[in-house]
Length: 632
Image (cartoon, rainbow, N blue to C red; front, top):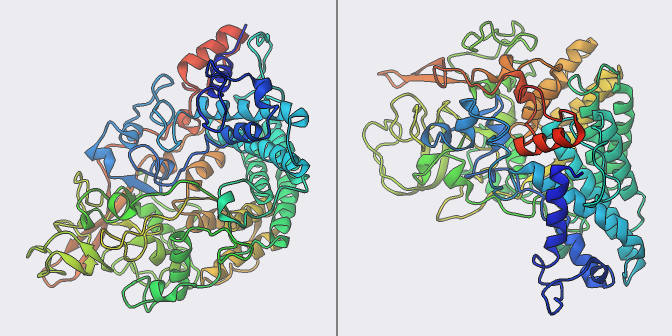
C-alpha cells in the first residue's frame, strides 16, 4: 500500500532527473539512473540544487502579486478582494475555502507560493534521498561533501518548519526515503513537539558541519543556506511548540528559553547585529524622502533596512538579515504601494488595528492592551488612560518612528512620478500635471485619487497605504524594485527570545531584549516592574509593531490561541479610518468597518490549512486514520 503524497513525491523525484537540470548529461534515451547521478560530482551537486527549487519567494509574490497571510490577518486589507473577488484574498474573506479547493493551497504556485503540500513534500523527499546517498557518492572534495550534506539537512528542516506552521501536527517524520514497495498502512502522525525535535535534529546536524558557513560572503553563492539559518529555525520552531495551540498542555517555555538564549548568543558571536545606522542618508534623510517628521533618523533607518537587499560580503552593511529570497519582489510602487501613482492597484492597505498598535513617542500604548476595543467590530477603541499624547482628532502626531517608516496616512507626502494631472476636487494638490513632483497623500472620503473607496483597485480601503517595503521615490522613472524578501532576521530572533524568557519567568532578560529592539527604533524602554502577564502582553505587542507586515502576525495570533478557539477578536472585523474633509480644510477623524459583512476566515478551522482533499482521502484509505485538520 502507498500513501497519496508519497506516490506523488516519488514520481516527481524520480522523474526530475531526466528533465529539470541541463547540468545532467543525458544517456541516449534521455534518462539517467540515480546510480549514475551519484557517481558524478557535478550531478550530485545538481541533485542538491533540486532541494532548493521549492523555496518560495514570499513577500508580495503570492498569487497575483499580493502579500497572502499579511492580508489574511488583522494587519491589512487587500484591494483585490473587491476588484478581483475570485483571487486569494477575496475568497478568504468570503470563506470560499474547502479542503478540495482552498485559495492558499490549491492554486498553482506563483513564485513558489501555493500548492504547499505537494511542493514541500517533494522537496523533503529530495533532501532525504540526497542524505541517503551522499556519504557514498562521488564527490571531489570532502569539504564539499560535508557542506552539501549540511545543506540538505537544513533545507529539510526548513520545509518541515513550513509544513508545520501552515498545517500543524498532521505530518509523519521521514528519516529515510520512501519507496513504492513500502507498506504505509502503519504510518502515524507525529506530535507537534516530535516534529520540532526532528527539525532541531536536522538543524544541529547542519551546525555540526565545519564546512557550512555562518554567512554567505560571495554573490555567486547567494541564496545558499547557512548555520545562521539553522539557529533562526530552531529559535522560531521551539517558540511555536511551546505556544498554547501546539504544546498539548505541556509547559515547554523553559526549554524554549534555553534554546533561544543559545541561538541568539551564537548568532551574535558570529557577527549578526541589528541594522543600526542610516547608510544612505542622501536617499533616506533627504528633503524629498519625507520619512517621518523632521527627517526622523529612526524612521529613516527602519525604512532603509526594509527597502535594501542584503549584500553578500564578509563585512556587509546589513548584519541583521539571516536569509533572504533568491527572487525579486517586482515593481512595488505599481502593485503594493499607492495605486494612484501608476494607476493600477494598491494591494496591501494597513488596517486601523495595525495603526492603533503604534505607541506614542513616550512609549505609551494608544489602547488598553488587555482589551483594545469595547465592541466586536472595533469601532469603539478602549483608550489607555495613561496616554496623554494621543489625540483622536490629530491621530498621526507623536507616534513611534516605525509608524512613519511603514505607513502612508492622510497628510503624509511622497515625491515620485505621478501619472495623472490633478483635478479641482483634489484640494491639497490642485493644480499639478503629470510628472515627478511632491504630492500630499490625502485619504479622506471623496478625494478622487488617493481617497478611501469601497471598490476602486487603486484606492485605499482603510485610509492607509503600505510604505514599509516601498522605496521613498521609486516609480517608472526611478525603477527601484522591492528588496529581496527577508525570511529571517536577528530582530525576530531577539523577540523570539524575549517571548520565551517572559513566559518562562526570566523577566529581566525578556525586558532587556525588548528594550534592545525599542532602542533601535528610538522608543523608550518598557516600564520597570511589570508583572509577568503585563510583560507578556508588551512582548506580544512589540512583535506586532516591529514585525508588522512580515508574515508573522498571521501565525502569531494562531499559535497564541488554544485548540478549538477562533480568531473572532482579531480577524473577524477589519476597520479603517473614516476621514472627512471640512469646508475650512480641516479633517474630522472617525472609524469604519472596511465592509458591512464580516470576514469569514476567522472560525476555528482557519487555525490550520487543510490537507488537500484527495491526499487526505488517500491517507484515510491507507492508514484507516483521519489525517485531516479539524473543520475541513
